[in-house]
Length: 81
Image 1 (cartoon, rainbow, N blue to C red):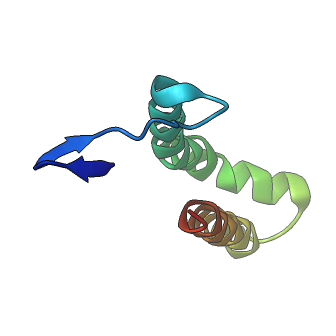
Image 2 (cartoon, rainbow, N blue to C red; image 1 turned 180 degrees about the horizontal axis):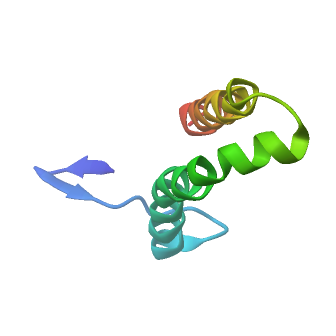
């Protein structure tokens, strides 16, 4: 946002690919992605451990890796501005 004469104005060059509202919807989907993945992944962990013939703690490591890369990717993309 650009501040002129005490008012805050939007930049004249918004996000080029999605536009303003597309960016808002994209950020909303990113915010819903983590809770949705938790709700789908956690109940399936015991079944996945049986299917892959491994322990639940090893399946839990995949969730930790997912969080790590989601957070690091998110901070790299959004901090580059």
